[in-house]
Image (cartoon, rainbow, N blue to C red; front, side, top):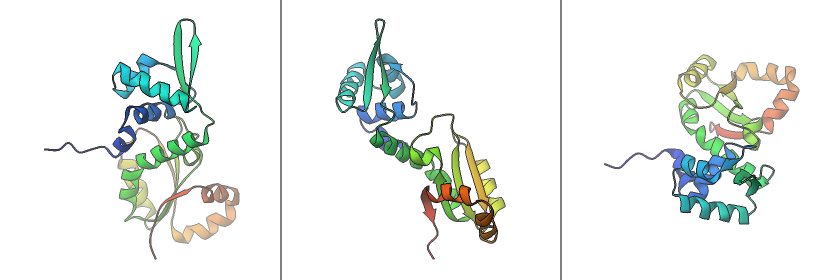
Length: 183
């Protein structure tokens, strides 16, 4: 029997992607090569070959501290921010599947939509829901590593909300539409 693959496995198909995924999920932190190897579940040689390539591509930087070599992500690299956004949207796929029947539109906004989030950041979602109570219940029932901060509004509440919360809605409108009901 074939093992069911996690949807995030597409970002772990190679040693390089495994390392990149681990490092972008831990921005601002430095790691020993052995820590990266263990976290990515890859061989020592595979880790160092991949790290060498990532350094060559200027996606990872290496710093010598004492007798240790530490590796970290190049945080301000636009390509890595987009990669982080892809990881975030992939993480949200199960939630979106649950919300499809309960909502008209789901938007990811805030730091997670820009690839600037860290593991402690919550994930901001704006949900235009057919049934706000059911949508809130569906989100609460899901087990996910990160906290979901959802603002849920019904279509009838939206017009008034847009008028009262213009700055907030500008931020939401800069976000990523993860799902929208076809008319």
